[in-house]
Length: 479
Image 1 (cartoon, one colour):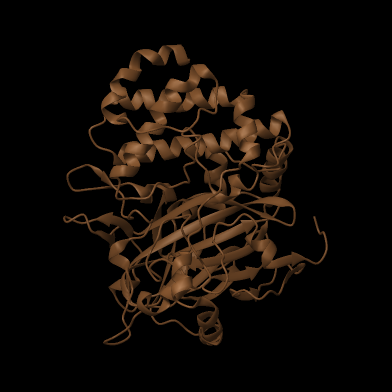
Image 2 (tube, one colour):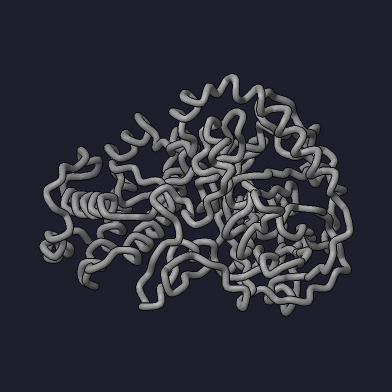
């Protein structure tokens, strides 16, 4: 494939400039493509006002990495495991390139074709390149932290964290005290496809999980598009929102005439996608459902936690048989992490870092649906249950989470609502002026997937591969 690309490479000369490049990690014949992609991303990095969706290691410009894939880099000891892992990170690389091309200007279709073909060709070459696998083994891709450590140094973090500990616990107690209260003017939402479709049986889900795991040398249940859609449809939640003002209406994230992000409540929308975690030696799928609101309503004249835009990520982690195991949620600022253990064999562990709000729920029956209630104004989780008898009255359209990265402007071009740090600038909160010593960038502001620091004391990311191993343990092996 590479020899067919050489005729196109001159088209990229205007893009690449004369920047230095990393040492080639692949075969000599792949060098041109490697340089082409590397220089394209260099140009993107020097001009962008957004953050790419995944981590880019400059040694491997055809690939991209998230925290789950980086956690396997030192465990690829067979051809099958390498093939499986490479397929995943190459898929991220394709998404990365698609996003970068959509947000770039003045790139002709021929140039886009060259970059796409190079990405595919380099993946093919990588599979059998000893140099590539040696480079991965010697220095695994490392994702940057979402914390700014220099702020912790300047803010006397050791002292600040001791002062904050009791305040955090008080806030969590206040949130717990609101659990279960009756909500005024509740609106019930659910995804249109769930309302209109027949649910899968537990036997069908178990068969799907067994079949996928058998075909994976890593035990990694990677789903195709049809399976992904089936699982997301099957487990999509009913969401009840206390609706006091326009700020409490669910909508679609878009751009107004000034290219400012806003939530269009005329289009009720749920954004969804699958991620993965590692828990108790297994790789488990996580179903993410994200809802956006126009704002978090101010409680008074000065409310440092209020501001434009608000969103919440509802995440359901499935066990190896496809049954619900853990439910957790955060607001899109990374705040208010709540974790619900859904099986009696799960127990919360103890450590000195900041703990999420922890709860147990009875193990749900195969026919019951996840139901989450949110308060008005703050959109705080008020109740979580599994139920068979709450009808949804408002239908939500569904979109992939990835569509949040590239929104269409009024002129038809594409733009990311997130800035270079993965934060929506317009959603900044006043709380950042007194929470900065904890190292979280713009506390309270909405941010893109993969950029969620979810603890002020200690460090924890919402997408950490082993996050639940630090919070929960199985009392016995029930599988």
